[in-house]
Each structure stands twice: as C-alpha cells, then as structure tokens.
Image (cartoon, rainbow, N blue to C red; front, side, top):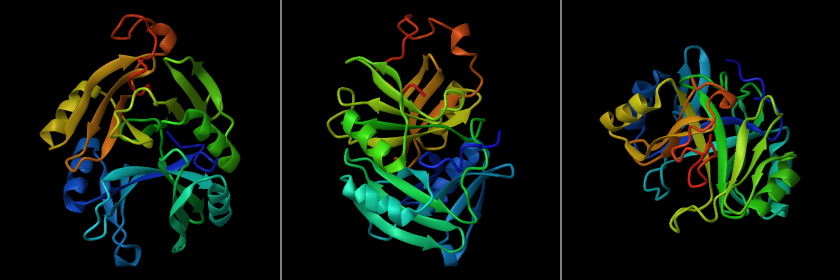
Length: 281
C-alpha cells in the first residue's frame, strides 16, 4: 500500500544496505523478494534502488575498498533540515559518522550514531521522499531500535526528532514503546539491555514483509543467507531473524496474520504475551 508517513518528520522514510559484495547482494534480494534493481550510475556511486513493482522500497550501496565496516542495513529518519538535525543531534550526545551531504537533486543526508551506540541516517527530501510502499509483502513493514540504554534513547530521539513515544509495556522483563499515531505506528523502541549478547551493540533493525515466513526462511538458506532465529509466532505475527550471504541482519515478518484480538494465546509459550527475548514486529 502507499506509504503515507514517508514525509512525517522524525519517522523512518528510507532504508539502505551497505554491502561488501554488490552483485551477490543484488541477486539475493531480488530473488528473495521479487524486487527489481536499477543502478543509478557513476554520478551517484552506482547506488542501487530496489523496487517492488513500481514502488521504491529500499536502496543499496557498496562499501569502499578496504572498508572494515560490517555489512548492515541503515534506517533513515525524515527531517526538514539535515544540517540543523545534525547540529541538534551532536548537541544531544550523538556522534556524526557522515556530515550532511547533498545527493544531487534527490535530497540531503547524514549518518549519526545515537548516544546509545546505534547508527541511524537522516534524510532531507528534495525530489526523493523515500518509500513508495510500506506494509505489504516485499516492502518494509516495521523499524525497530534495539537499545541498551532505553531511557537515553527515548530522550535523544524525542529531543532531536520530535518523537511522541507511546508506551506498549514498561516492566523489567519487557519494556517497549511505539512511534507514530495509534492507527499508523511505524517503529518501535525495545529495551534490549538484558537481551542482547555482549558482542551486539544497540542497533536499528529492518523488518521486511513476506506472505509465508517459514517458506521464506527456507529460501534465505537456499540463497546463501543464514537463519539466526527460526520462525516464531508473537502477538503481532510470525517472524524470523535472518542474514543475507555477507551477514547483514534483517527480520522477515508475516503480512497475512489475523488481528491480535483474533489470535490471543499464539505465543510459543501459550501466554499470548510477546517474548521479550525477541523483536516483536
């Protein structure tokens, strides 16, 4: 469906992958999701735009030769002034990984590391506003900040991006807030301090929709990716945590689940409550 919140300030408007193997990643994602891929040419560093039908759904670029950065997806938040957003973020304790830069006539971007250690992009739209579709198979369906410093993260994004978080749960076992209006939530913040392995830092996580999570997880393996967590069912659907062939992490989530009220008690433990050890979607 159309992505009505792509221009809502402070909310996710785009996601792209930085990869060490552009051809391999291109084949993986086009075959997994039925995407088509178009190369922007040398003027834009051969940046690839993925499309589902006629809708822009994600992007991809290549790491510079010799880069030691891991392959990873980045979520971008919409801003009206990238330079002002970066200044505010720096004042609020963020590290600037890439200073604001103009991307031709498309817009202006920057990359930050928030005070809790999670990289995140900012995008000031000119000609390009971001996602052309959201919430369907083959498109993004959710964005989630898994943070080791939950209160600090909420404070930072509220101050810099104008968030108005809505508390979903606030217990020591499961602390989570959502972003966006009640009828059009687009992102979540998970208190992952007690759940992330020591080797995993705070990070933004991209969820991509599929009609059948179990079948897609099997295809991930067939295409050279890895299933990190086998499919599980939670209050909001069925999910699997996977990587592409070079290790970039993302979540596949079902888009055909009935409303939560119709499927109470579908958790693996039979309680119907989200498993705090896993993203909830």
